[in-house]
Structure formats: structure tokens, C-alpha cells
Length: 422
Image (cartoon, rainbow, N blue to C red; front, side, top):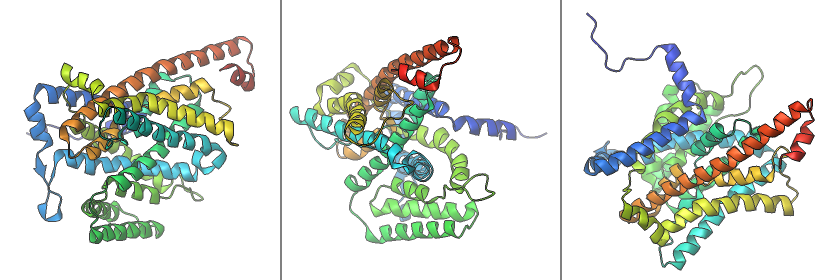
């Protein structure tokens, strides 16, 4: 008699279906939301249990990797998320929107302004209330998984140009966020470990150029690079972005998929299905009592985070796009109208994953304030998601009405539809 397996391996068709589902923005966003809700319930219903689990240590002390589960999630698993982000950035730079300066100018400018204005809003609000300026970077980030998930669910009739604009904006946002982490939240540098990480990255690049194949070569090298980067004092997620940027994104004759496409296809389900939800599970567990929620609106730091995400992001992204179109040679994609940009600007206020990470780094020495700022990130991201959902639904209805009118007219031109959509 065969023993019963508690968690049997799924048959190949089911595994393929599950992996394909995890590659979609909607499923990834839902898993992220479920993990955040689970963290809130767990942290409030069984607070001591949650703290014990998050603070449980494991890993080799001799290698400087005796970390808590929360640190393994933030510094380890989240590196996979940034590895995928690095691949997306490389693809956008080589074959995507960022390849052509004329097309990239507006979303790049929107991303930069969408980070500068929230930082300015936080600084102004926190300074006016006599608060700390340590958290200026918390509201600058956009959660690409959540934002694309909301767009995919709400905007079924929206033009593809909206997704391209948001993806380009979010990729540039991720790059700037990792630069902020590397520059402003780097502890004491350990030169030997940093040199070792740089050497491993150079070996990674050389092996890719020599077209050496085999996961058994790259996986140990990637883990070694990550461990050295962690011990160097530079945030370990930088190693993920660096390795993602090294992958080749241009196809060669007779090649069905580039190495970047193949690896992203394999890694994305792990990132969406485990890495990001695990980080959310150990990062989003904050108190949601009435007094704690009231403190979000009373403390200058938390109010700065909240307003930075909801107001700063919207004004920054929309204002940066408008200024670029008004005072430079850059032009808005003809398939987009300014109400579309406003909806995307509101959508960029969903900070969540990267904002929670920066929060932990910014307020590392003040755990209570870090928890309160996490609550502000959650409330601000939820408010931005609701506002964006309303605006996107209005735009979706408008495009549906125009499409129906066009069909009723016997099929008007795309130019006519574009002129009337605003």
C-alpha cells in the first residue's frame, strides 16, 4: 500500500496552469492583497505569535546570515522581485518604450516628478509638524504588481498605451527606488565583501557572454553574490537588479525567446507566488486599533507618508507629464487623453511593497514609528487604489461608449475616436 502524501506534486498540466496564472498581474496582485490581509489579521488577533514568527532566527551565523524570517523575506526573497524588475527594465531599455527617447521622455519625466513631489510633500508636512525627515523616501515608490493588477481588472476597454505608459513609469520608479536604497540606506561599507560581490557579478556577466548554460552554474553564483552583497552593507536587493540588467533581451536569428524572456518566464511565478506575498506577510502586520489609525492622521511623519502617496504621487506624475508635453518636444501618445494620465497618476500612488521596504530601512531605529508608517502606507495605498479605480472605471466606460458609437456609425476611423475620447 502506497503511503499518503500530504502535499503531492501536481501533475504537469496543473503545474503549467498554476505557473501561467502566477505570471498574470491580476493573480499576483490578489496574492499580495491576501498576504497583507493575513498579516493584519494575524498581527492583531495573535500579536505575540506574529512577533515570534517574524523574529525567528535561522541561517548560518558563520556567514553572517543568521537572520530573522522577516529579514529573509525583505533581504532575501524580495531580491527575486527586484531581479524580475531588473529584467523588465533591461527589456524596456533595449526593445521597449525606453529605447526611443521621444516615447520614453514623458513617462520617465512623470516617474521622476512622481518621486520628487511625494518626497517634497512628506518633507513639508513633517517639517510643519515638527516631525522627523527620515521617511522622506517612503511615499516615493510605486508597487508595479498592485498597480498593473488594478489596471488589468478595471480597464478591460482601455487602450494598450495606458499599460505601456504605466509599465514604463513603474520600471523607472523601481530603478530610482533601488538607487535610493543603495545610496541613502546603505550602512557601513565592508570593502572586501563588496569587492567579492562585484567579482561575482563580473563572473556572472562573463558567463552570460560566453553563453554558458545550466542553472547549476548560475544559481550558486547568484546566491554567493547575494550573500556577499548583504554582508557588504549595501542592500542585498541591489544584487537582484544588477543580475537582471545583465541578461540579453535582443533575439538572435532563429531564436524563439531571448535568455531574459526564458528566465523571467521561469522566475516570475516564484516572485509573484511566494517572494512578494511572503514579504507582505511579515511587513504588513501592524496594529489597526482605533487609536493606532487615529495616530496616522495625527503624527506628522505618518500624515506625510499618507499625503505623499495619495496627493504627491498624483500631482507629481500628472504634473510631470503635462510639463514635459508643454515645455519640451516630447508628445503624449496619441492613443492617450489627459484624463487617462490623471487616472494613471492616481494609480501610481499604490506604494505598498517597495514603500514598506523603504519604511523598514528609514525607521529601523524607531520600531513604533515604523509600524505607524506602515499603517500610513497601507491606508494611503488603499485610498490611491480606490481613487484610481473610480477614475479608471470612468475612462473605461467612456471608451466603451465611444467604441459602441463608432460601431453604430458603421465604423469610424481611429483618429476620430482618439479626437473624441477626451
